[in-house]
Length: 315
Image 1 (cartoon, rainbow, N blue to C red):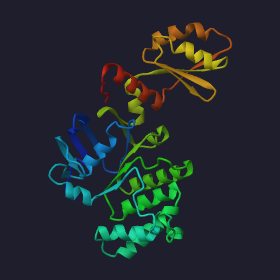
Image 2 (spheres, rainbow, N blue to C red; image 1 turned 90 degrees about the horizontal axis):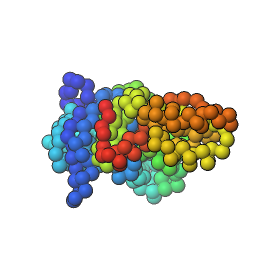
Image 3 (cartoon, rainbow, N blue to C red; image 1 turned 180 degrees about the vertical axis):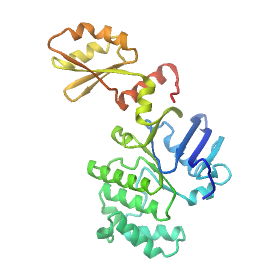
Image 4 (cartoon, helix red, strand yellow; image 1 turned 90 degrees about the vertical axis):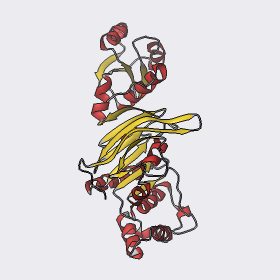
């Protein structure tokens, strides 16, 4: 791998990409260090996949600069591809081939030495050995996910780019997948993973939120939450469905969301929010408690503010 004294695996600035008149990625900057699991969040169409493809050399930015794995993203995309494992959103292997045959084909595509041994090692490492002769088309979502990850790791990449890898996968398989990602991170492999799931975002060392091609926030989960200084109250008891309708009409209330048997009521101005809620706090049928804002609260706040006033970037 090319030298990188700062130990930054991804270091890009000012990335822009257009598709016709559509400005998909706007002046994006991103830094990811070796061994980090970096979560990339945002709604569909926000520019996550386009960014990932620019980072791994599949798309050329219209403007901007930077490096991935120490290689220039504009001048050395071929070198980047040699050291990156890219897992796409959709299962893209041959369903009429077995697990072993799929991995053997990928190994031949990369021109790997000792292909048979590498395939058997991948089967064992990801728990696929007992299913090696099973057709890929007959696999569940979780096993297809393991096959895709095994294929990404065959050529021993330094960086994994995973585009919504757990979509449609059951909770047990998702948890096992994330345990594997943390094991890879402990070996020094860097992971950039896009996801819609808040629990997965909290498993990342750092994360970023992108909306309409603009990076709105990045840092650790605690840093992202603290950057917005939101205040959240939980309320239980009474007719919560009717209460939610009433609370949403208050100017100091930005969000009202149901969480199990409680409502979470969130605003960005602590004093104004408490004054607005004071009459309801005097109701003996309701129990109020101030709670820590969640990542979900923060991301909805960022989305709503960006849609109302244009993006406000948080660091």
